[in-house]
Image 1 (cartoon, rainbow, N blue to C red):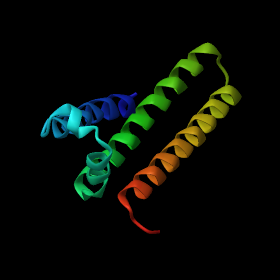
Image 2 (tube, helix red, strand yellow):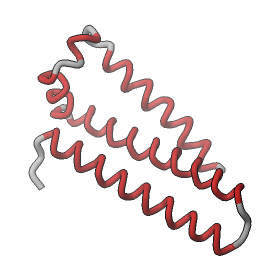
Image 3 (tube, rainbow, N blue to C red):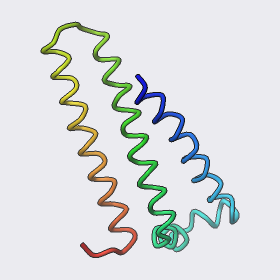
Length: 108
């Protein structure tokens, strides 16, 4: 549970910084396509988005894991749920990271 608490608190601060960065310019103009793409070219902002993605993914999938573990008991069930949530989390983080890399214009 410590991982759940730590990721929740750190994600709260990371999302707060993300929202504060949106308030630098008027909200309507910050959502324009050109400004969104420029945000991804800012390495600090792209890193912040990656941190938010990883923290929220870990926090969310750990929460789903805990809920599923409360439904049934047993070593096999616990191992299956843990492996399934880790795989799903890794797929989500991979896809989100891919999106951030593509939007930032980095060539890999």
